Length: 141
Image 1 (cartoon, rainbow, N blue to C red):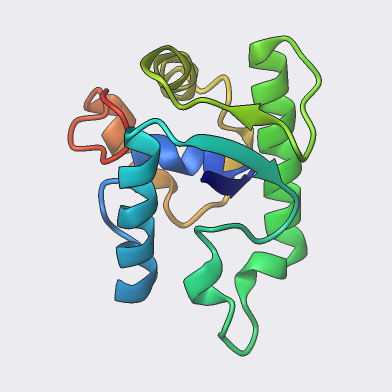
Image 2: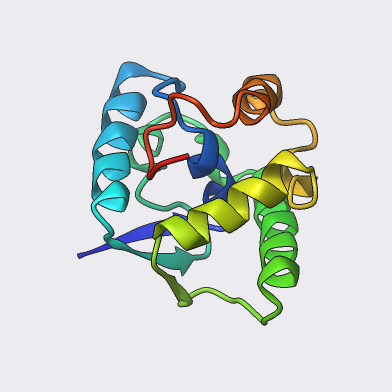
């Protein structure tokens, strides 16, 4: 199987420690974290992804808001620049140690955090990155 992720979730996954919007959301994200840690491939998608699923039943899911779509565009641009290649929906990544280490190093330095501007989780993610990603649930920091 493949985990479907939108672009800004490529960044969010780097600091996931088990916190989230609802218990259904975090339970789902924990299952996805286990799959990614086991090496399941990531397929980049446009719009809501596997992490968004528990929120899609809400009256106005934030997953469709313009600000989230802009967050995806910023993350996509940053990750593409880091990897030195054009990336678009359909791209596949293997979340191995090399990939995660490269993303985390550049996340911690701020180089790939333009999508994080204004995010309600920004302070938490900054603390996790500052603590060398201790306690993350995806891969090994």
